[in-house]
Structure formats: structure tokens, C-alpha cells
Image 1 (cartoon, rainbow, N blue to C red):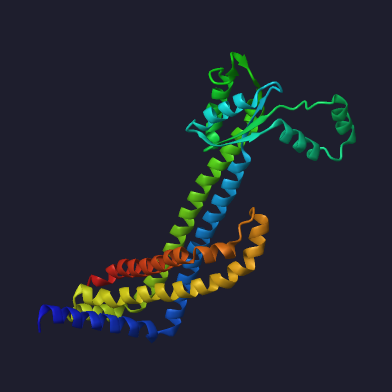
Image 2 (image 1 turned 180 degrees about the vertical axis):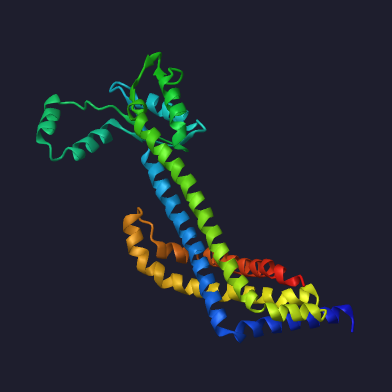
Length: 313
């Protein structure tokens, strides 16, 4: 028999023994699969939590901006030139122009129920509001440098005459700094929590698989004493661990289907339009890959590590 034939013969025996061991003790198999399912559910929920956190933080970032209000006598051409200059800054993500007429319309809509203000506005006989540039930075921490640029007179004057009335960053600086701190803290907390839950889940799965190997310790000792190779002894247990991961992964994906459907409307109303059921379907291949690869990796690695103790006779 050639080496290649011997290799395939041993591989078939290892696979056959692994599948036999999987079905041999139904109670241990069921317990191991259930624990692995819990582990993979935690990993799946971590993926959903990360997506929810990213969506929430993105929504918070979108709510942060600064307004540049111009004097009423400013020419639209000059304002648009300034808009172009601001857009060229690397820190700036988006600049929106609001004309005087649009600003007046929005003001009236906000105070539609406040008759004294509307009456006073009508008595003026003219539009008292200036045009506005709404500036959004790429990162909340960059608003300080954007505001400093706006406050410097380098590109904010027309014919040597300043046309900016005010920049509201300095009035809102405390709120922006606090929100920036919240976003930064949430990022760190989310990463730490994800890492902690992942480690706990892997340890639980590892200890469960180690228990199944402990129950077979006498069989392993006998095989070792009669001269079976380390690979031949370890192989079936690694195969069993992989089967645990595959079965648990498939069951986890099935459980996530009704679970995300049930939570879909709740998450959509609570987390700024994030529907966990829709997210699950849109990213099914990605989530399935994470869960299946995690299950197979945890099962195989846990089995390989757990059996090391019993390979020494």
C-alpha cells in the first residue's frame, strides 16, 4: 500500500470514527451541541449589537453640525464661493446652503403656532434672516479646527468686508464635546464588551468539549498504549468538534430567523429605524459565515487542545 493510499485509509477511518462518536452518546452530544449553540448565539448577537451600535453612533454623528450665518447684505455669489472653500477642507464631509428665503420659510414653520412672533415678523416688512451654511465634519472631533478656520478672516470676507454674522460652534461647543466623548466611550465599551463575551463563550464551549473527552479518557489511554499515533487518536475528536460546530451553527441560523423577526419592529422603533430582521436577511451570508466558521474553529481547536492532556501516558 502506497503512502497516499495509507493516508486516505487513515483519513476515512478518522472520519468514520468521528461520526460514530458523535452519534454514540446522544446525551453528551446533545449537551455539547446546545452549549455550542449558546456560544454561537452570543457571537451572532454580538454581530447584531455591533451593527446597532454603529447605526446609533452614525445617527448621533449626523445630528452634530455647525451653522455659519451670514449678514443679510451678503451676496449669494460670495456665499457660494465661501461654500466651495469650506468644501475643499479635508475635515469637511458636507456643506449645505440655505438661502435667506429658505431660512425664512423654515423659521415660519417652526413658529407656526406662535402668533406674536409671526406678527412681529410681518411688521418688519422684510426678511431679517441671513443665508446659512450648514457644515458637517467627517468626525465630531474635527469641528474645532473647522470652526477656527471659519473664524479666521482668510476666506470669509468679500472685498475686505466680513460677511459672516456668527458661527454657532462656540455656543454649542460643550454639547459637541460631550457628544464626541459619548461616541468615543461607546466605541471603546462596545469593543470591550464584544471581546469579553466572545472569550466567555469560547471558554464555555471549550470546557464542555473537554468534558466529553474526559468521559473517553480510558479509551484514549488504551489506544495510546497499543501504539496508535497521536494524529489517529486526536483526529476523531477534532472531527466530532467540527460536527458540533456545524450542527450548532445550522441550528443557530434557524433560531435567529424567528428571533430577529420577533425583535424586528421593536429594534426599528427603538434604534433609529434599525430593523434587525431586515439586517439579518441583507447580511445573511456574512452572518452565516461568521457563525459557521466560529463554530467549526471553536469545535476543532477546543477538541485539539482538550485532548492534549490525555495523549500523555
